Length: 130
Image (cartoon, rainbow, N blue to C red; front, side, top):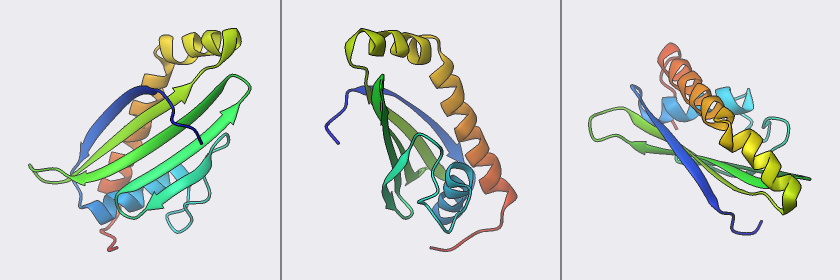
């Protein structure tokens, strides 16, 4: 997939170790922590580098996109989960679609909800070792 323009980034600090948080990312995003290939509709797995990076990519008529989850140790404790979005919106219909998805703030709301669900999942499950 070509290099896409950067859209935005949102992050949350999860009060859990990275292994537990990785498990929570896979459970939340893929539905099954044992199978990172089970990604949401509209995406395919690009990269799963346990316990540091989960990258999903996709495309349709109005956009080409990538959603990347990065996990790192937070200096204050816990795990920092960052969600980066990269996307291109070709032609006039793509620009309209971008206005609907990005410009409306809908994308930001959905990504922040995903991050809060990841944190809640990590808190509610026992520690999983990598």
